[in-house]
Figure (cartoon, helix red, strand yellow):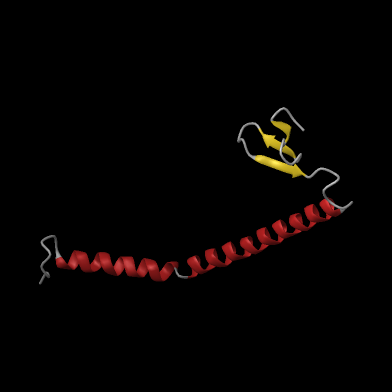
Length: 99
């Protein structure tokens, strides 16, 4: 624990909370030893850590796919913008078709 974090015990449930002083967010919580079976807390922490890593990996893959699709369609978007600007130029500044 560093000076940027404090540990607090909840008066209601006796849970130990580690709070980040700068953000006022709870960083960790641990149940009192009598409430959970031995090793259950470590197993739950391990399981939740695995799920967070799995979610980050999935989110990263989704972001990559989205970025690749965005890059693949970039040419079409630029062509559409160019055609729109060309049509606007052809119409002239008064909104009437030139010609």
